[in-house]
Image (cartoon, rainbow, N blue to C red; front, side, top):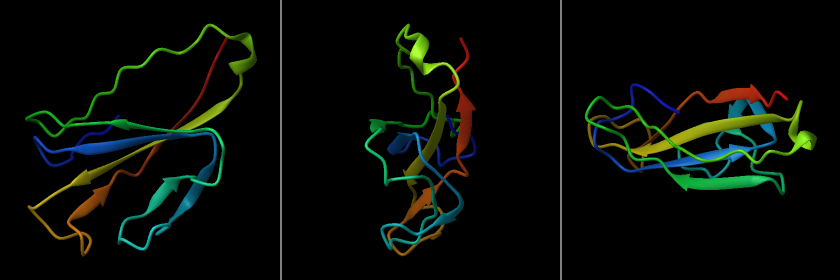
Length: 102
């Protein structure tokens, strides 16, 4: 889900069906949100990083033909003490978009 994140830190992953391509500081905490929060289809999950600063998240995709062609947008948010990208010590990934295929 994310690379080049701080190593061995806690993270929050977001999956959304809405996109904010330009990014906005939705919560006013100094990080850009590219996954849209103004949607009823929003999932949040734990996304810790490994010693290399990579976050992996496993989840199953239902075998539902109605999902074919549906876009999804992922983004990660991480706690960091190495640099100060935001006043709260948070950083965000640039996001990932994908489309479910049949």
